[in-house]
Image 1 (cartoon, rainbow, N blue to C red):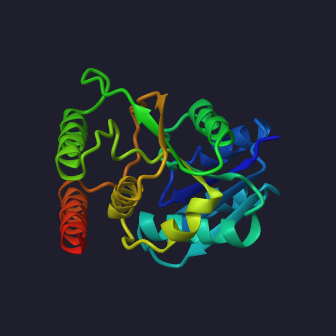
Image 2: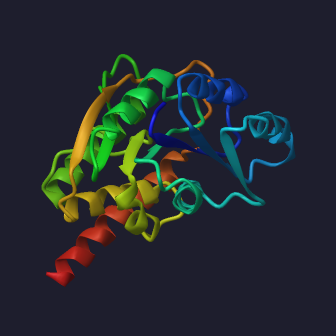
Image 3: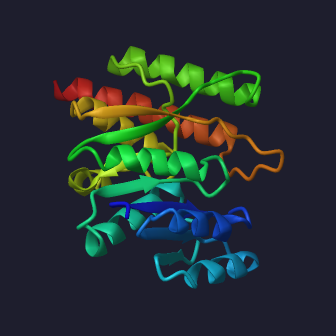
Length: 235
């Protein structure tokens, strides 16, 4: 039996999500928390299937509140009900994270008492959209310049977080895609242990992503600059 829970923020997810969750359960994941972030009536059947799994807890937002808000709702649920476990693994609902990689990050998480695991993709320009390759490479460079540490995959949604870290992580600002960047900045600024685990780079032919390139890149850039200046002012 694994000692971690999986948290999946889901906004209009792929319809194969119940099968994906079933595979995680079959591989020994004891608890899965799914946050329906305002997906609406067309996706009710997907979440109804998920509710039938006794290992699943479903949280429903009546409106779309953003990925950060969904993650924080999942973290709060975990702390209230499952904090006896070692921590959580966050996974996306768009098919980018294989079952094997979720389990790999969780296995590594189970070996540490504090800190974070980052599922890090190998950025091969032949295997991913050009805009994604450029965006991720540029963000890693800017992160290194501003915060002094190179993180190969700053935008990975596949992360392992130990239970002792979740208290302060849940209190961070950001309700959208900027939340994960803010979390990463605080990991580095607090000198937290960060372990990178290689994972596959998966982009399906039919790919469901709600990342809006201009809007969400602007949010992430704003998070980097604002957190940098806050840290500079506090020194």
